[in-house]
Image (cartoon, rainbow, N blue to C red):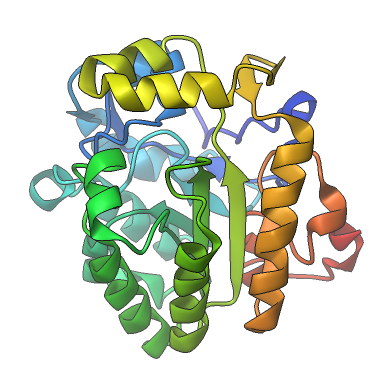
Length: 295
């Protein structure tokens, strides 16, 4: 077994470049984000489970992987969720990948990521921090188990000061919940102030079973989301917000991002004309001429 390739699903507008992907944990992520799309995958339901066999076998897996593409951690569970403090599966993977010269793309909501700065410095690394709101009271509703937004920004600041490229994901944007442009501009402003390279944005995509799960936690919120997406469209297993509303939100955000001097990209939206850089931020850890990917 070699490192698994990230599944680029072009039918739902994915524009990611080739890369590998590792989820060090299975089950439901400990951050308990109410909007999590990973509930559609059987491996990411139930209790959070550390992949201890992966921790044991990562060196052997790496040795069977020849092409040194960037490795993303992770697309379905946060690599720095609470259990990582005890099990250190992510740290073991990062240590092995860095030792063998693989570039790293870390996608997280956790300030625990600063623990591994020593390893990030050993190989080209990009840290992409998801910050969906600057308002703690909203974050507690939609991301109840994750560190607060201020802690995430402080972590990004520390990483940037250590010379590690950082980006911010505003993902997902949910109209009437965290789509206020003044709130989003606060995120962009703080990101620019600490030296982030780009903002990647995406609107919420609903998967089957998500609204009933939200309803069990917050019936009012579930009803509001259902009404917002009533006239949306299903694309490759995801229900999208109506196209014109998505474009309006993302175009407005792009103007704000450019005002603050950052690059901008959207994730799985079908609006490549809005992108000024590669969507996932991996351009900052890739080698070679990537100009052809920007158009």
